[in-house]
Length: 430
Image (cartoon, rainbow, N blue to C red; front, side, top):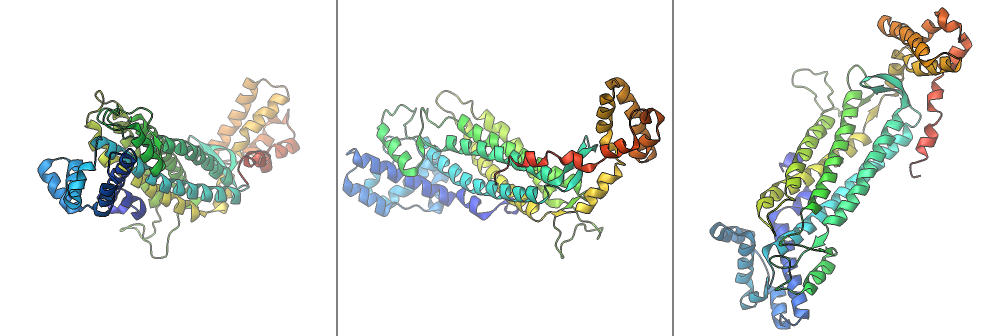
């Protein structure tokens, strides 16, 4: 991934040097297990542990000639170890090393992403509690609906990401597996003890049944969850972008003193961070299709999945980490304009009470159809002529036959809409 959208901690996991370090660790653990089975002499094991080193440039040089990355790595090890290198990679196949190492890289990445999810959950919860009773107009189809609170908006996002966090934990568990089972997964040339030993040392689980590779449905699960998280990030980003529009100005991304919004228009303050997250979410979601297609491979394995994973796995995880971190900062530093929220609520001219009027007329004995027609006609007059809905109701003779002025005032009390807010917020952990 390009540096602009990369953070160092997670990017380092996917650098060749770290990959080779994991490969070496796995190869040594296999030798340890074979030593316990009496298949690698103690003396040779000590030599291997002491002399096993690799050189990235030398590995690349060898691979240019032989066209196989794992063999290039093993050749470089043998150059450093000497004769005892014959015990390295004994009875196993390349994918035993590649896939088990991939499990470690994915797990290490998941640990970072979990921290970022936890951080985002924390700031969303803080915003939800802070603005629990801050009224704002709710919108459906972008049109005035009924009042809600800004805190409730944030609470909904909190629970959305909480669900993804729980899904992510399960997906992380599913990819944390080790396969050291040989050319087609039969353990023909390697004792099953080796797989269990390596898995225990790496603090992951033994694969239940592998072919030459770890089944790719495991990865499809993880990256499907990641695609959902990306969609939730976009969902939140779009909310911020809409609420920052000039006509609304209910929230605003933090804008520093020296920041500039436009090369042409000095007045501009654009929601560029949220827009950036929206764009990245599109890339992450697009990446899920080839990962799903990787589930279907020929027989015990083909190599069609390899190029996809080398590109998409690191890129997707790095982008997700970047987006989560950026969104946490956006929410933490979000400027919330409570006055604009209240002003926009009032700009609806009270139309958000149309359902309350409808229900009250039904309680008075009108059929739903008759009540709806009466309320809709007056509401459309309010909308089209920009007149106060409550005033029009009080002046309408057909309404006055059923509702007094005092009853209409009661219907228009804002607090009515928030009587169950505490009940909803009781669902959040204290």
